[in-house]
Structure formats: C-alpha cells, structure tokens
Image (tube, rainbow, N blue to C red; front, top):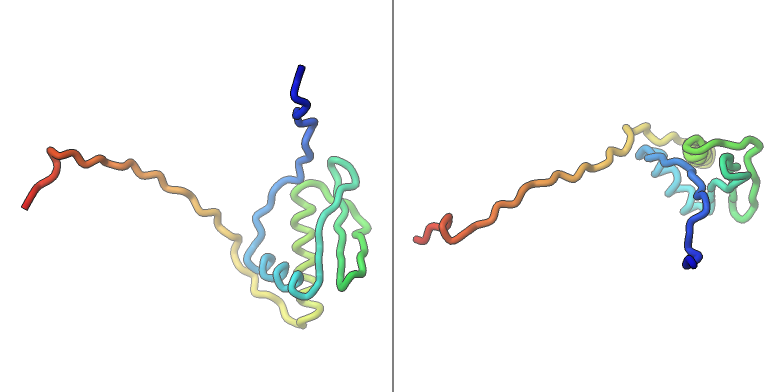
Length: 115
C-alpha cells in the first residue's frame, strides 16, 4: 500500500530567463498595480491575465510553454512604455552565474614552516 503521494503528470510551463529591461518593466508594473500572469487553459496552453488597478482582462490568444513567459514580459514592456512614455533600454540577457568548483588542498604538518 502506497503513501498516496505519487505525483500525477506535472504541468511543464517551460523556463525563461528574462532580460534586465523586462525585469525592470515588471517591477515597475507591480509597483503601479499592474499584474500580468499566465493561467492554464489546459496542460499545454495558457492565457495571460492582465490586472490593472483591480480591473482584469484576458489575452485573446493562448500560448505554449516558454512562449507564455515571453509574451508576459512583452505586455509588461508595453504598459511601461504606454504609461511612462519612455522605453527601457534594451539590455543583454541576464547571464546565469556558473559555480566554479575548486579543489581544496589540505595543509598537513609536513607542509607548514615555522618561523
């Protein structure tokens, strides 16, 4: 008899690393009561919900994984430009930091020199 905690077919929304300007537009939007997020139509398609000062609307189109995130950030950039009459400078993509593994050396009493 199992514990009942088996995972039944997870939903894969893909992943997306936003660019610096996209992140800045999202942060501006959240500070100004603009919330944009995906919600599922089914397990492979998503709509985008846009809430501005409590009024919510939905995108007419659906998007597949990864594309939903790109479209979400396009909406944030659109609303940033619309309300500020500015464009955020386009920056290169955020670079994922790589962890560098270094081998540690141990100091033994034989390797130490006393003064």
